[in-house]
Image (tube, rainbow, N blue to C red; front, side, top):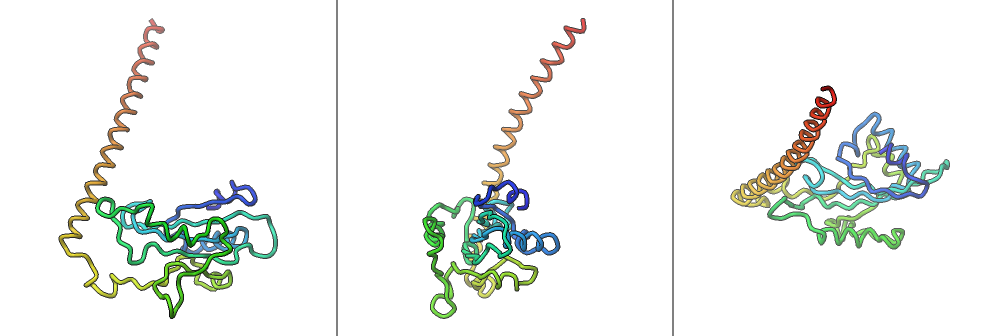
Length: 214
């Protein structure tokens, strides 16, 4: 995160995929988050389903921010959070994440004018809304300035009846394993091809060297 911020020009924009621990770890992590909120306009956080950018089970997010010129007043005023994780169930094969699954987020993001955003969540009228904002002071008051923010109730933790049938879960596991195996096989093929080319190049170089030596 520090490196990306350094590379940005003033008013440059970034969208960075980060695992959850970047949002909540203490020590240097807290220090970096404080500086980022102060020196940049950290305006959006997209909570992704598990296994999208990292290994299965690893939770990832996309953090959107703009680098700003130095000043005493913090640049971040509101962080808008969209929860595409809680009570969402995606798999590599049977139910992969599609572009259409991001339509509501894009509409909420308001790319043409993000200062006209409106929350879809409210405590009484829309408790299941996935889009809401947190002010700068609210963020600072969180333990270790954690940006690991969620508010929706996880139905799978509260009611096991909401879980898919065992045969469905088993089928999804098999599909995920097959998809992962296909990806590894493709990588192995590419590596073998590269390795074969490298071996031929080294062999050719050695032959020329021997001839020159004679």
